[in-house]
Each structure stands twice: as structure tokens, then as C-alpha cells.
Picture (spheres, rainbow, N blue to C red):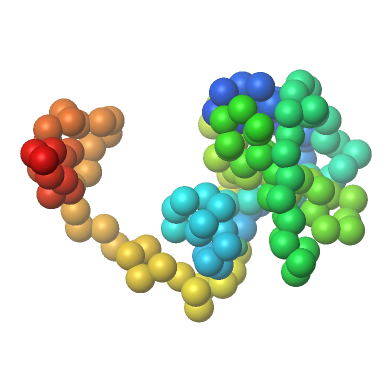
Length: 148
Ligand SMILES: [Zn+2]
Ligand SMILES: [Zn+2]
């Protein structure tokens, strides 16, 4: 039996579930994904339309498309990306960060590496923490000035 995976947006208004044999994902480093995620790249997997259902909040899903076919769906309440139909295919593109629990995801493809952000490096040599450090420490690392 295929495992059932659930996901939701940050505020929980929009929820969905799907099943898939293998959770294989791709990362896109294009400039549009950088803007859409506010980060270095998007991480996405595909699920068959027939194995996919919205659990709640489908009426709160907003959509934005570009002329080149790029489409992103997002929660109208919190702005988190949520799944969208993949172009003309019977598939849903699913943003991997929206999944609940610790599904066994394998990233198998990276695309648009030619557009990769210069600050997105393979090797990280900065400060590392398991959780959020003290705010004043963070501000110190970031050289963020709080005085007017
Ligand atoms: Zn939301
Ligand atoms: Zn992209």
C-alpha cells in the first residue's frame, strides 16, 4: 500500500493529502523560484492527480501565473505556497516544505543551476545552531544595527 502524505500551509487553512510510490523531488534554482520562495531555490515533487485531494481550504487558494506557463498557488491567509496543477499534465506540483512529519524525500534533480544565487554555496563555514540562538547574538552575527 502506498503511504499517505499530508501537507498544509503555515496557518493551516489549506490542507491536502496524496499518496506516492516514491517521494522524489527536484530543486529549481531559477530567479522566479528565488523570488517566489524568498530563498535560494524551490524544492518540489509531483503527485498524480488521481492520488491527490484537498482536505480543506481549497476556496482560500489563490493563484498567480506568468505568460511562460509558470504558475504558483498560495494560501490567501498566510501566503505560503501550496500545490498547483502542473501545466497541462494530470499532476500536482507539491512544495516539499509544506509536508507534515518527516517523509522520506530524496532530491534527485537540480535545475537552472546556471542561475544559481552566488550566496548559495555547497560548503557552509558560518555559525550553526540546532535552534534559534539569543536574538542579540543573531543581530551581532548579522551586523544588524538597532540604534537609530
Ligand atoms: Zn495559510
Ligand atoms: Zn524555478
